[in-house]
Length: 218
Image 1 (spheres, rainbow, N blue to C red):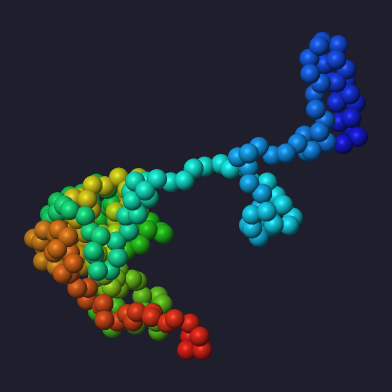
Image 2: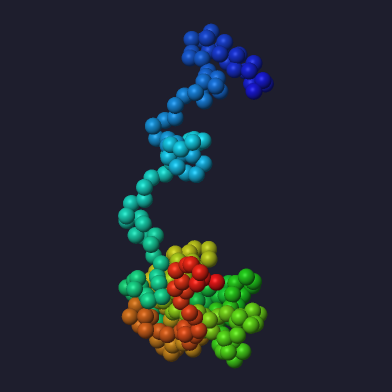
């Protein structure tokens, strides 16, 4: 602050000679009340609490239409699946152009860390992932719900342009990957109703976590 003092004094003198308003000092600025758009919160985020810190009031309340557009996740029961449909044949073509560069031709895996998507090898069929963590988890030998496969592709793929696929394209890719894993027939066309009916091979290996807390949680 000592180094700033001569400059502030010089600025004040210059302003006085030119008829302009003097430049406020740092103490003057600090003493001014915050704008009405600011809020005051303490370190714990409590409005008006002790140890106040200023909040700049940036941003705006998100409208319901924007929240609805972002709220696109799909649960295991597939209740939120959109309209549309896609065939495994169309999905195979789309996979070659949009997915194979990362996940490998036919979904056998690409350059790390891009995972393998297709595979139902006999070793994995025993579902020994807990005892042998080196086993590769694929869609066919591990995923419990086909609906969440649609959800993940729709929201997160392709990696460089997530969310760019149409619902028909996502249905097609989902159908192709399920067919490639021998979960559904090769010529299948999926829509919301058909996808809800798909049962993954190892769904029953998963136990829902319905714990509510307390001494029973270990």
